[in-house]
Image (cartoon, rainbow over all chains, first blue to last red; front, top):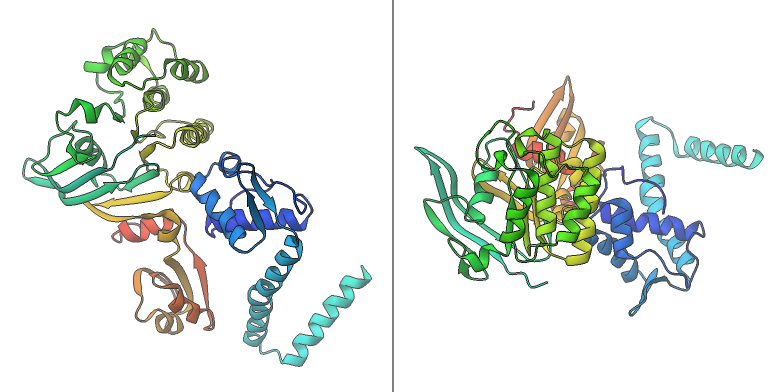
Length: 126
Length: 295
């Protein structure tokens, strides 16, 4: 577990996102157990029902699965599933606002793409 | 745990000519942590007193598992209302020593857990031989918390438990509450003014305003109904047309409004040139109950 619950979005979404982050970083590998509802509740001082909601969201997306009587585990293929989900969210959460901000600065599509390409090159040369 | 539903129906309460609770209905479901929030004088303590038959009402009914709670020892032994101790009173329970006050509670609550009580006395560093009125405000809060937790009552009510506690103790209190809840799954009702740090502990939030229940909803569902929308005045007005605007704040042409409305309508706002940001429970509370005072 890492981080704190600080931003304003709903707590159960923050919980599911933190678990996803940890799956991407290899903190929890496929077929490994993730913290239980009560461990999460204690760790972040949140209501167990909220923690359960965050976990259940990932279960419904096939990222976690339940082993009866044992706990919650990372599903096979979870890392790829999280990446796919994040890619979709990346488009909505970053690319669209980027284009919107570009439009409000009267940047043409070409200028915007030039900037993106420049950023990619600078990132590669670092 | 064997918990029942605590229910208030049509409760009216007046002090003299002033009616403080107006035809109030409330249902407390088992196995949840409820947060009760309201402004000063909203009727929180009066309501909690009536729910636990420690205060009278003018009309209405309060039942636990379908049975009236008034003078019902069986029902009342399932409900613990740990009242806030008032430092200014030098009579009644304030003249008792801490250990005697705790002993009274131990007799009253059939589920009293003496071992747990002792652990909390040690952790809170309370001196059992001191009189209640000699305690600091924070220590008084610790005594009320101790009684609430150790009562192990299926319905446990805490009135302003965080008042007077420093931030370390407040965090510890919510930890203890959650640990206990994870173990027992009993029902808690916690009233507080320090909303933000408690918001993540409450599964359900009850907002009381001017003697009426304004909201009784799952915390995240309630909070998710609200957004701040800000941008140029005319664009903001256009986006928020048809939504319930709770408060508005203007600086020149820049306008920020707090709105309540379906996520679908707000999705439309994402395409307009405005900023949409989520609100915290505290923001929601101020927007709902501020009545313009905070602006």
